[in-house]
Length: 140
Image (tube, rainbow, N blue to C red; front, side, top):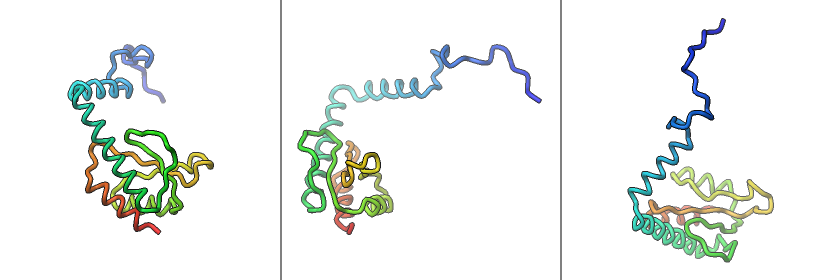
C-alpha cells in the first residue's frame, strides 16, 4: 500500500535554486563567510603559517634520514616524500596517536609506491609537528 502524494510538496532538484540544503550551496555560503571574516590580511597570514609549518615538517622529516625528497618543485602546504618505511606501520603509529596524515600514494597508483603525502595547515603548532616527527622516527 502506498501513501498518497501531497501536491505542491515536491521540489525538483533542478528547480530548487533557493534551497540552501544542497551541499554546493552550503559550501558556497561557508566560503563566503570565511572569506569575509578573514579578509585579505587574514588569508595572507593563513598561507604564511601553513607555508612555514609545511617547510618545517619537510626539513625535519628529511633530517631523520628516513625520508628523501620526491620532487624538486616549490610547494605551499602539501608535499610528498619517498620512504622505505612500511606504510601500514606509519599509518598505524599516527592513527594511534591522534594524527591524520602521511597518505601513502602507492595505494592510488603503483608507480607511486613509497611516496607519502603530507599537509600542514595554519592550525598545527611546532610542538605538534615535532611530535609527529618523533613518532615517525620511531617507526622501524
